[in-house]
Length: 401
Ligand SMILES: [Zn+2]
Image 1 (cartoon, rainbow, N blue to C red):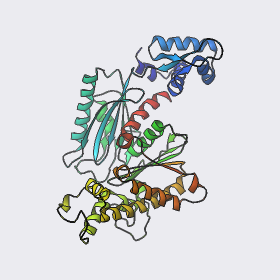
Image 2: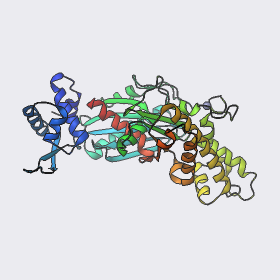
Image 3: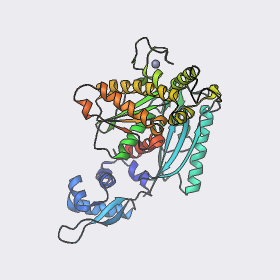
Image 4: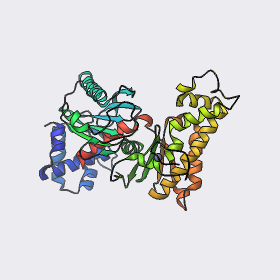
């Protein structure tokens, strides 16, 4: 039997066998005695099912455990080479495709920067072509491909796998994109669509093995997106638009936002705001590194990051002000959602330590009550791979539920 068939079999007869597989996946390497304790079945049944999983090659013996007097017990682990999963991160700035084994080791990667030419047709033929390339290069077939998880910009129809009408894609045509149908036509495997901020939260949560069950994940770029793990599960909002967090108002009558309102958090933390602010202020500053010798029209966030790290006061001033607003916005979210851990992700967070420090300092200042001390902060560990990694994890977990 192939692994996919086994995982797709939802018959009651297969249920205990799958529970055992999941237990070995979650706790492996694990001994027979520990499996027995966790699945609460008869000893003879567990012994027989371990044999069956071994015969099919779904699990392997992986070393010996600690002896409690007698012979040390054999430990079992799932065979992580029995299947492959694709994770896709589809955002306004890039599309990234990662190939994983079942331990979520990254086997291959491909990505593209989104331009005015990246219509849905272009992007999906690129995704389809990259997957075909991965299959040839790494020698696997569609039978071994467990699924394709897509973390995307919303709003989405998660159940039907459709991207509805996201704002601000550079290329035209990004409206009602049936992701599930487009991919399934070529690769008839399990396809799941979820908010990229949510898959990133799941990716970071699973990867970091944090001892917290409630994690808020924030990523800024073209706008601000957030995802939430509540009680160890992705918290699903009704409409599935992770951008909405960015449109909470932090400054009544403040800056005009792309959504038409004024004073939204996104209006103060987006890369677009930072770039415009730097352009404006550098114009008045005789000493800014960004004042002369730069084509201001093409000023990028990476130039601003570099200037900040070289001590440019305009770049630093603008980043610190933006970080302050970001911190206030995060404090508001913490006061509403009560996460134990807040993960902050953005290119600036990793490159400019003082920007991240200012976000944490400000957020801590505005968090209410005892949670001020209790809430932990961390930059993302998976950085720009978080959304695609979490999308792949989502696929595997869906088989084990
Ligand atoms: Zn707004």
